[in-house]
Structures are given as C-alpha cells and as structure tokens.
Length: 112
Length: 114
Image (cartoon, rainbow over all chains, first blue to last red; front, side, top):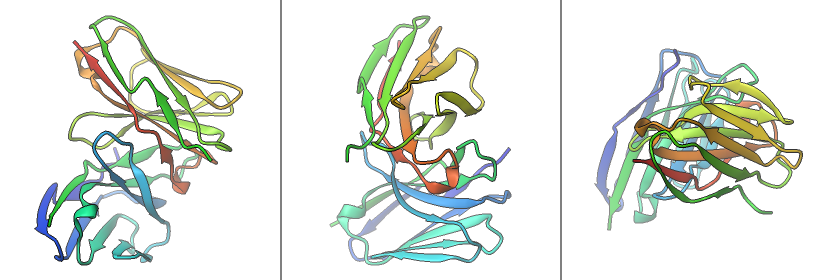
C-alpha cells in the first residue's frame, strides 16, 4: 500500500517567517503534486514535479522532488497571511487510472 | 472557461438511505475522478470515469457507484448510507486519465449521515 506522510501536521508562524513542509514515502511515484485547500473549497493545484531532483519555484514557494522520487518538500519564504490554508501533497502512479495518493495534509496558519 | 461545479453543496441524509451527488467537469475535460475527504484527512480516491467507462477504483465497497454521461458530467451514488460515509465528496476533472497531469477540483459536497 502506497502512503504519503506529511510533516508537520500543524504549523503556526508569524508573517515574514520561512517554513518547510515535508512529504515522505517508502514508495516511488511518477509525479508529486502539491495542492492548497481553503475551508469549504476543493484543493487547488500549485505544482506538479515529475523528474527526480527537480526544483520548481512559484513566487515565494519552492518545490523539490527527491532524487529517488519518494519524497518532496515545499518551502515558503517570507510567509504572508494569505498563505494560510491546508497544504496537500499527492503522488501520481505509473498506471493510467488517475489514482492520486494524498498525504494527510499540513495546516498552515500565518499570523499578521 | 467554467471550472468544476458540484451539487448540492450540503446534504443531510439518514443512515440506510441512498444519495446521488452530481458533477459538471471543466470545459474540454473528458475525465472525472471522485474523492472522499474525511475531516482532518487528505482525499481518498473512490473511482475515475473516462469516456463514460470506469477507469480505476479505490478501496471502496460496491455500494459506491458512478456514471459518466456523454457530456462528461458525472454522478456518484452511494447506497445504504453509513455514519462513516459522512465526509466532503470532491469531484476532479482533467484532460487525460493519467494522474500525473494534475486535476481541477470542485468545491465539493458536504454529506452528513445521521
């Protein structure tokens, strides 16, 4: 059974601080996606990484896919209150079934 | 372009009843996937529909069933509702069935079973 474990589960920081969220597995994934979800809404795709060692930047967010394609990290620089939300990592498989394996999520609160 | 729309947004049902949830995919998307998200958890894959056929299923019992229509909209049906079925049900559409391309999710249907 493929599992993704995210850490930390909860994070409360002050505006301007940096943070890193980790997503780890013992399984290899074809891709790793990061989503952000706000209360009462569905997840919104932030990025997809598909190559081991790949790094992608989206403004103040930096995403990295591990060399062995088993883990990923999300780093936010100078967090803002608008970054508050639930961050979910999701692993895509090699079969063409559309099944994504989601982590349990990291709840981020950025205080002004 | 319109995104993914789901209806209803909230629903309360009694244990043992049946429920139908609906989803309209994003324009141009021919693939719809359904996920169940319990409170405080990440979404879990229920099944996917591609060109009106089921294309993969997660670890959910047969009382969870679905349909996809020629316009690519979809329904999720749950029979014999149990208390543990209380969750946010998310519909996601995509251009291809391959999970590696990422999905556009709807806002979900919050189902409460009492």
